Image 1 (cartoon, helix red, strand yellow):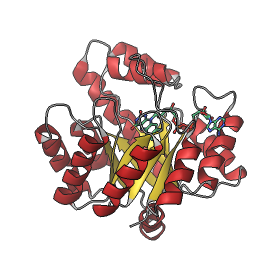
Image 2 (cartoon, rainbow, N blue to C red; image 1 turned 60 degrees about the vertical axis):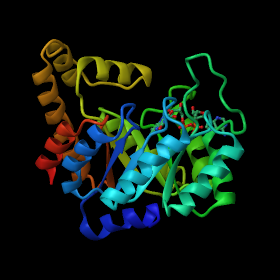
Image 3 (cartoon, rainbow, N blue to C red; image 1 turned 90 degrees about the horizontal axis):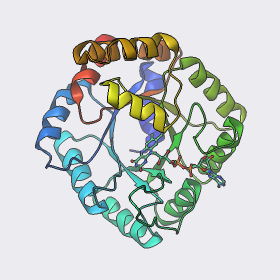
Image 4 (cartoon, protein in one colour; image 1 turned 90 degrees about the vertical axis):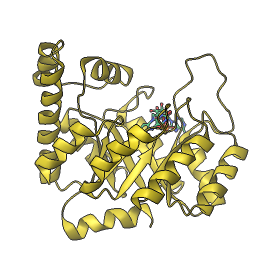
Length: 284
Ligand code: FAD
């Protein structure tokens, strides 16, 4: 099934399509399998698997096929320009085609911080999308940034670059996490004004711990409204209250997005199902 077909179901059900993101674990699949067991009852339409420097395409694909076979759910591996040459991409597309994997998330990736040299066949994600499109008919997702990508001069500039990815053949936009819903709504308007007419899927990351949320928001320069950042400081040393607050925050964010008619909610699970399952218990 193509990505845009997956999201067409929302037009019928009027409820957002639910998807999850996981990463390849370093110590075998057992723990992740039990987390996915908890999440499968929410009938995800899609599960995406990140690309990390700790896993090769081969290892990532083992997880992709494991999930595809056990849960019978479409799986979307992420693929980055930073970690792949043209040859690597062609090889991976053949593997995905053989396994009937329906879609891929095409990304530039972040510059390595461990001193390794990134691959240089593709400079930006739009070049990767164009290449994939020329070699295969796999459906392609791309990343979007409700507050603009951290390297871009302005949000408009970033949306012009987003348009290059869509013009190159991408079908769906998955956003970075955000906490300022108004910025997200403004972003969707700007994207539409730019003539982009594909589904925009909201990326939801539950607050799990002080360390996690500080790292994520600092790295990508994500605004945290005062009512949320005050509580994050208040629960700094109280893990249980932080986790409960994270669930509460995500539930109210999801409700607002659902009321706005959002097409899909993509949950960054961080391989921990508990909070996401509680959020879904509240919104479904
Ligand atoms: P691009 O779209 O290439 O944009 C990067 C920057 O360059 C932006 O500032 C953009 O405005 C600018 N730009 C883009 N095209 C052009 C152009 N043609 N000319 C000039 N400037 C241009 N990272 C991982 O390593 N692994 C993952 O699995 C992963 N998954 C992600 C999933 C989602 C949903 C999101 C939102 C991000 C994910 N990332 C992942 C992070 C992502 O790789 C980084 O944010 C990266 O810095 C940018 O990737 P991109 O694909 O958005 O890049």
